[in-house]
Figure 1 (tube, helix red, strand yellow):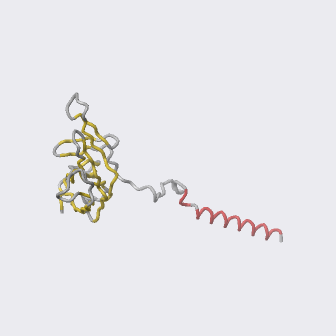
Figure 2 (cartoon, rainbow, N blue to C red):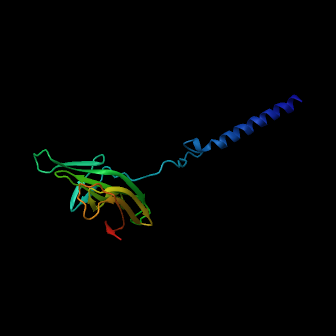
Figure 3 (cartoon, rainbow, N blue to C red):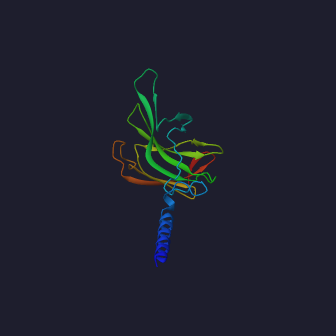
Length: 186
């Protein structure tokens, strides 16, 4: 009788250990063969914070998401370019790799804040910043989305007769495609 009880306890312990290992298998960093398991929360998004973008034939290189250049050498006025907080991720150049689409703001020397659309696009070896396209002066970006290589942006603008000092309240939606290294309005 004692022998049967010991065998039953051993079987129960083995079953409990097997079920526990099975239930927690995704919490281990590597499987038995030593290859990495997939971590479903780690999604790669290309980071454009140190990319070079082209604004009206002028290259601007960002560092930690911003660039500051003197407007006139020796003058305190600077032109600042910064990445805004609206991003979309998807493949816009049909190479099977994820790209980053973003808004960039440029200001300095005047009252305007000029908003541009840019992309951090995959190439054959690495990612690079794109030519940017001007969206508007003192507009308020709302969203960017990508659907089958079509980029849709939404932003608030002003009515045609309103001054730039007026708060933007008119929702505008535009679509773009990325061809030959540039955005083209659809």
